[in-house]
Amino acid sequence: MDRWHGDEQFLILTATVQDVCETLGNPASWDADGHDALFWAKRLEQADFFANLGPADHLAILYAVMNRNSQWCLALQRDIKHAIKTELEG
Image (tube, one colour):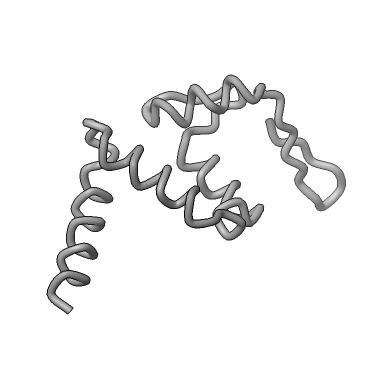
């Protein structure tokens, strides 16, 4: 929910952690505040969540993407395969 205070706009989040996690698990859904998974991906990026991940975290993300049979992952799977092919070919 957005609230205005003078010239400033404040974003008040009322969704729960579970609500957001369910939204991230199903990109076609929205949390209690009407935000979708892309909103949360951008929000986590802005909070430097991805910058603070280590190699084991990268592995977990790659594992999850490559083992997911979802239309939401197909383009990223292709990009990963292309990057691997590039590395193999030198």
